Length: 324
Image (cartoon, rainbow, N blue to C red; front, side, top):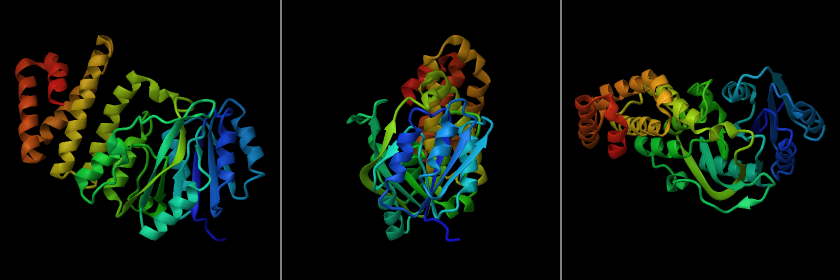
């Protein structure tokens, strides 16, 4: 059988209120050479029944059900099941424009791209568009062909939706999601940006993101701060294994590590103490990595880490806020 051009991958967890809108926008695509794969991640609502009803309306539609394992494991399963030349992650509570797949696919083919990204617009729970820019200007930037720029752009655009990925590139580099923590797409996107041969930006708003619903856990600031450090550790390990720890990359990794540790100042004293070993683990890795930095960063972080050593750990939140 002919393989589809695009595999549309949808992780589904308790999405009964919005999954039909999502699938309707996919069914309405002007580009039709695609398959849809949905992994029902142990939903306790009517999500599975709704998926089964929609499977009658979309020709290439596959449903996989599993016990709840979290979005990272679910996305890894979706990649394993995909057969398309490209994959497009779409969250179950979001929708896409009718020419979403067409524009991303034809751009990827014309530009021989490993990744094509587009812009997005936020929508409210009732589907109204919000014309508010919530992203850093770096989200909208096309990364240049150097590791520093790609790292920065991947960090500020650390979501897997609103993108088309070439599947054989992901499989070649064995890219996967790190399970157990929120914002698990952050390391995945950074690594894919660093490893891709060509990244193209389609400067159109083609994806509509419904904020704070199926992924409402990401609005939990405490968990985001803690899990952000776990993701950073995983990213460092991956960079090391893949021999990507060049000076400009280490510069940016330490910059993020300092910012992430600084964020703990907003949490309670009990949480700060409970996660002290995690913070110190990241701090130690960053400290040992200063020698790999470029000259200006070597001076900057050398001063910061030296001051914390002099004044003790209790000074870390004040000093990181100054130096970040």
